[in-house]
Length: 337
Image (cartoon, rainbow, N blue to C red):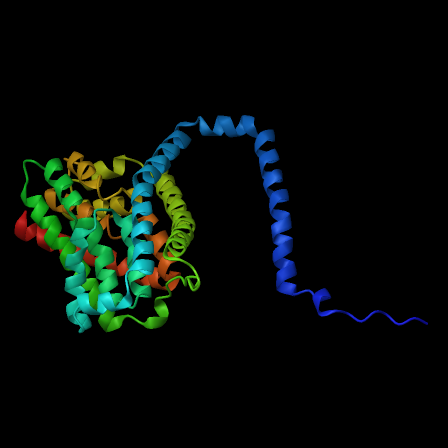
């Protein structure tokens, strides 16, 4: 009786590797089945897309993506540059050692980023990974989309008869950003904040590490941007416009209505001032709330924050930001507007 040949180490198969190979082998099959299904159902799909609701959905989805994607790419490039080219010691020198003082400095630094909220999320994630205190990074995340020069200039153009709206937006947004940073210092927990880890760049050139970081962030943050844009388009397509007219007559409801509308519409901060200016049936304070809330928390931002810092963080950070932004907007509007 012949003995079986001894099993070589190379013959051993890692279960995880086998499972991964199986997934890769099945991916082309799944894609082929999906394409065949779309071809077979192209007539009902075409009829469904021609419905007015679907046309509205498609319009909003494409608008959100077209507005946000260039600034997302800008944020990804800045994030990769920070991760690869900026040494950690730079942030230790640039920010005060005391976290309580680093928060307002980081909030004011948001004025130099010429982008919208889609750019600030990956940059804030890179700052946390580079050792910046999370409170300061979060203050930067909230302030950058609302107080940078492009946004303030757009606000001045949109409200030519109300120049105080620019000052009100600057003050309210900076106050909310700093207050949320200080609130995180007092109540935040490390286990809530789980920024996505990065692959090591050891053995790579600066250029290779930079483009590897860019590819990682585009695929990761871009997926959450698509999810947020789909949610915004769905809610915008099904919400009756008559609700806005009914809410405008009540001071409290008008503020809450525009705050919720800012979350739902998910408009880029470079364009939201023109939308707010068109809502003439609402008070200036209500429209200020729209301008402060939108760049800090909306549907696409929530999805991106959850993807960048973890769902436990987003579920706590988003409601607190929303509530504080509404309160500060009303107080600021009462004093300045």
